[in-house]
Length: 437
Image (cartoon, rainbow, N blue to C red; front, top):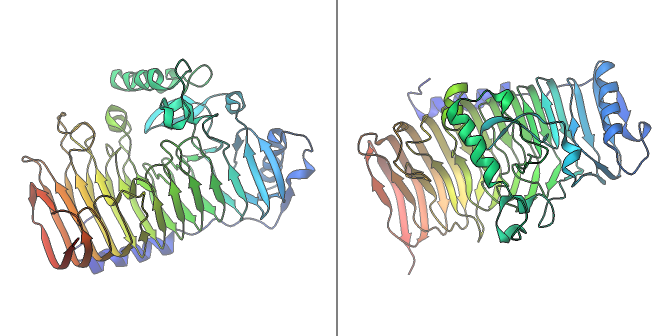
């Protein structure tokens, strides 16, 4: 799909918002406490969700209190409703996330520990309410597996490097996914929430803290709505929301204070992404606050299946620890494509790097044979107070960035000159840049 004008693109975004509607559930309520009263609530969650599902759907009510549990697996037509004053406290014992499930770790398919809240092949599912999902991760649990002292790693303790290298080798060599089994005895961290191959998904209102890594990670889902969620989790690889190889996603009214990208749109990695070949498309992000740490809205690092039709409006980016604004990051190893990205009416209070960064030299640089086309990226109505520079745009000589525009924007207190190399068709109009004095 191509858009002849920005107005046409934003009409499409409005249509996207209208068609991504929350699932509806029968007015049946299943109280968690009717299914258990022990110190660990794993079986009670399983029983309540199954009863709700078998009755034809409804709501599993989690009343005020703290409920320690292992993995929770949602089923079709079930809303997990976490009331104000309720905390779902996830176990720190990896055995509570077994058996291993079909998942993705850093955009590569495998079998691994179950995400804390997981659904596979389900329809009409939700996590709602104003309660808390607490992953209990920290320097004593989960985070040390990343292998850095900043997050609790101590010499001689196990961490993920060997497993991550093995998973990447398997992908390169085409090992069947059924044979890429990790989990018990391995150290690849699970995600917090992951619906996989699901349709009509809602995550609304909850507060998420202390995740092992990516917080909300829908994979190959369609019709996903994430709204009014607040996430506070500054751990390693703690992306806030990462729709991957999904279609029709709306992220609205959320707060992100996380240890990695606030939102990262993905489409598989390297050989595995090429094998699966599913793009991520039709994503609307609006009215969100991005406060910490890397990209406010990142597109990549994992772009291999391709990413198209991304819309961002009325967001607020900024904080002393937040790096980038719009951050499109890939390279000739990852490949894929990025096209039709539209950003407007964004307020930036402070970034340590660029307001707009489109960089084909991210990570592995230019060391592959699949240079990704990046085209039709349009930014308008940005009001920025402090950045390293307004924009950094770097394509390849043989694959320049194409169709980039920045208009009707102001960038105050910019510390250094903009960077532009290998860009074809750059348009900068009505832009004011004020340097630090």
